[in-house]
Length: 150
Image (cartoon, rainbow, N blue to C red; front, side, top):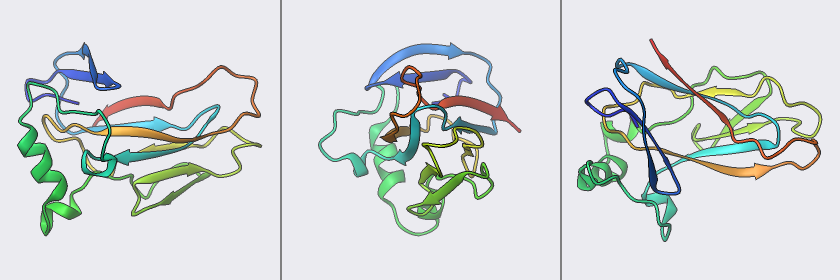
């Protein structure tokens, strides 16, 4: 999450990992590399993970997050998803909210996805790992995150 103060904050299993970087400019896109054993990821919202323990950070108005994820009309089109331009071995589905590496048992390159728009200030999002492959002799690899300011 990029705070409106320009801090980049990561959460793992609902726990803040603290400020990873400060003075982050606006227009921040998320870039992920489905690499190694990770073969499918999805962007999820609080509504889509009913029953999970995920929560909004205390410094964020949780009503605002809920309204953004459940409202209809123009805001629904602004729901965070992946950009149509992605790695040559990536298939997008579920209204571009899921990215899957094609041929994950044969190839682990060209698995780049990025968000279709920059993150909004204080916008909380979660990446869920949906599928892993076991054919590579690598340790567990999370998708590689990169944030790009344009």
